[in-house]
Image (cartoon, rainbow, N blue to C red; front, side, top):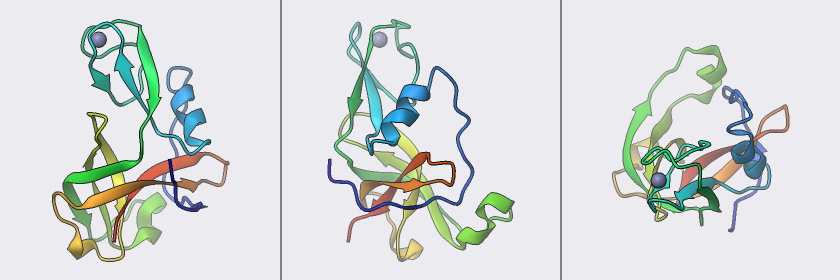
Length: 141
Ligand SMILES: [Zn+2]
């Protein structure tokens, strides 16, 4: 996977727990993990200890390639929540990836008004002050 250079994360941080720790550990290696169930074959995200389709615990971790397209989105003009107040205008959305799942994410772009359903995006990571990598997607120009 070709991940773009590291930048700093200034938003809220995830609450880590034993069930999702492998996902966040993989993020620190610039890998975004989705899972595929070995019992029913369905992919899933977000990260869980069992399959959300059939409840099997035989779920396999797979790093996505990092490509995707915008499935839906919203432009946030102003967020007064302290953790996001410095972001200015930004885009949040749902990205569909070829691995068969949709991911709620920040979509970084130089022009929020240019984002459309179907806009191609690419996975990137930003590093928080505590050293945790946070995944997001960035529009492809
Ligand atoms: Zn399953």
